[in-house]
Image (cartoon, rainbow, N blue to C red; front, side, top):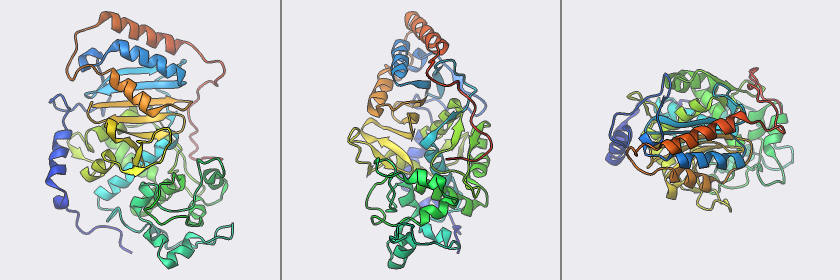
Length: 409
């Protein structure tokens, strides 16, 4: 079967999106964008219109949430880069499910490069060479439903939106398909052997199995692992040289988690999105992909965050003009589209998304530079020194992630 597009035309994109891509590629202060490929520039918060005193209070808030680090960049310059409890900037941090957004980004690159003909491509066509068995519970597997058309309707896009309809329970406390997948000898087969529980496109259901299938599809399209493809087409152009990414027993890069990166490199992923998928004048992501993330519509049905939406493995709060890569225990890459901000958190506890968004936004006082604030600057400097020097004795000493390439349950 042919997966490649014979012709990739940008003519189908609306004039609006094209104009938006041009305008969004420049910093919101009207200057040419700063590219942190070889390293981030730094700035005082006030020079970028943010309050040092407010950022100091934000660091206190991070203490209550067991943050490991907090980074904020505005207008392409880092205004805050703080590490808690003797952690350091050169220690990669496990991103947990924020890995999913990177897998989605690689799918977008494959689509932009013409390796994937359409995001609506039927997903199961990539696995026609696999023998799919009935699921072990005796129910009807995806293979059964494919004969009746339901599973044939699973597309790459429905995987990206967590609306594939594959039966999967990961966050309801009753059963953990993710843990079962980790114990299985063949993760892709485990996912394909799951029964269907809904028609594709109908219902949001958070599934790490979806992201692992997308990782496997990337390998089918590129002939290399998602990790290798990332180094060639994403990490390389962005100047990301330090990363660790695990794989399943068959060597498929883990799609649902398993990636560790430096917080400053996590911020580069967010900055790529903030600059509408362009980097140093070259387009890496298609504008329509960015637009879909920025205007996510899939309702996640979260009782504590009723306004949260989802698309392309990103979480979004459209009313606050923020979307984010989200990992377990508050591993976040946050993109504030109207404030020209990227924020990164690494942590070891859950965090209230809307409150965190509002607290970061509240530190913005102006689009342009503010008068210097020596008292606020001293407060922030002392707060960074305070949080970095203490040690939580109930926590283990931070260690670099495993580098053997495998994720063991």
